[in-house]
Amino acid sequence: MRPSLIVHGGAWDIPDEAAEACTAGCQRALVAGWAVLAGGGTALDAIEAAIVVLEDDPVFDAGYGSHLNLDGRVECDAIVMDGATLRAGAAATLHRVKNPIRAARAILEKCPHMMLVAEGAERFAQENGVALCKAEELVSEAEWDAWMKCKKDAHAAEHHRGHEQGTVGAVALDYEGRLFAATSTGGTCCKLPGRVGDSPLIGCGCYADAEAGGVSCTGYGEAIMKVVMAKSATDYLRGQDSAAAHTEDGRGSSGAMLAAKRAVDLLAARTAGTGGLILLDRNGEPGFAFNTPRMAYGYVEAGGTFITSVG
Image 1 (tube, rainbow, N blue to C red):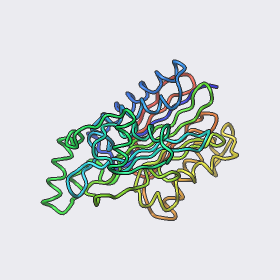
Image 2: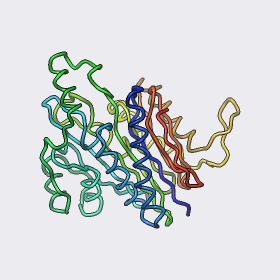
Image 3: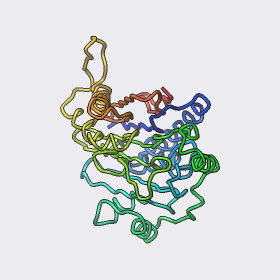
Image 4: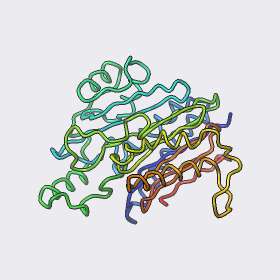
């Protein structure tokens, strides 16, 4: 089977001055993930490699550079899901894990449960080879400055590059047909301590089913949770023929793109919420959609060309 990879760096009102950095970050994530897939590696290794790049880049709201909560601390969430088994590994409210995707993977592979939070998640991660860091090592100068301004000015939106969005994600299909999806986030700025959004919740911020496809979402978490958007998008994929589908105006479009659009339309219609998603169908056909001003994303075309955009 031909491998496939798609990534995103969040759907929000990305300003012009951040567009180049977001595009470059998605490009680097594709390079890292595709190197694994092209070398015959697994989809799980590929999405971890891609998301680690995004988590380490302070332009995105995940890992280092995450938004700060009301107490001025980073709280990260992440999930990874196996399309073959429907098993997920998720971690939430992490304070001391530089790359939350690695904690999620440890839970996926080594934990009897599918989700751990806070100190228990950090302890499990450390016991299974994931190094912990100091909490302050996750705080970027830009986010600390934004938080300090928020304290003085009632959480004014202009202080933040992405006031509600900035989550990262990836979906990959490897040569053996293994399908994995993953999402990682620092959540919303000035959120209440302990808040968990859609990102680490199975079916909301992420879902993978080898019989249909894999999805990673981004956007306003409380709205995404209401429509279980990742699972909804996967259900829209089920049974579709990605090679031949048409929109109402007669223009050709892939089933993957149509499924993505339907899920975002559902989000808007039922919740008036904003966000976006990326997906691969079971054959590796990429799709994406968003109803925010922009979304940072990238994917690898069938011929191996990297496509990145802040659309």
